[in-house]
Length: 324
Picture (cartoon, rainbow, N blue to C red):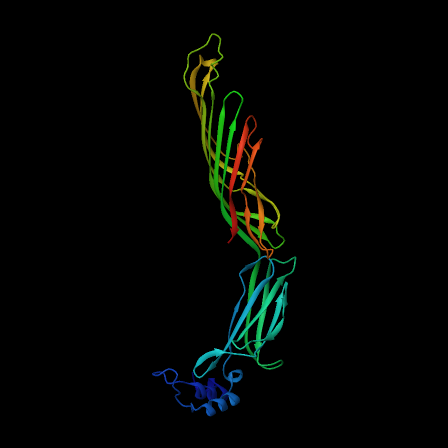
């Protein structure tokens, strides 16, 4: 840098703080005696020669009140050291800060609680550090956070059904689910994928044929499906209902058909949306003693009409969504 490109103050600061490059920490020009360093600070302190180093931390995504932490450091004896008693001012947008200003402690730390207001998609906080009110700014940063909360996990559901004529049916679901809640608690599906299998069997429909026909086996259905997508309904902190909407299904049916001389007939069909046997999965919020939602729990066991019509079921769901 040319001499004309720097100010007299910058030249003085350079000579006051420059170190020997071959021996970091060793003064190149200035007097390193304690009394000389103290005098240097009073004449050419950090507020004149260098901006303080400030680290500001705020979660990238928040759904309620969140902690903001500030650490301020200044050069001292050739290295960064905590900056106590520095005035920190916060100017939040779409949020409130408590406290909105204060001084750093002996470790150079300051913290505040940021609480978002309704009607915004994100918040920002301007953070300014000064030696005192009205003095030059030592450091300035702006941090932002989107409003919302992500929950994700794995869910399984088993539906085992029986019928008076001895027919049985078994559905097995397993899928991953990622849900995002907006600042107002409204959920949307970020991603969902998984599978469904179906196995059904019933006495072949030729057993009551007149005259009886000797056949072996039973009518059977096997199916598998790939699940993708879905809809959610509910609010953060209230029951959440999820229903798959997109599916690619392959079903194989073997039927002993009286119209065909009770010969077995195999039918293979492949379908896509809509989901052939719509099922909803309902999760309940798990709230701890601090009123934080630690999970959305889908674990549930029920019986009766909890599956497709025509059978009596025992349905068991397990799984949780937890904060991302």
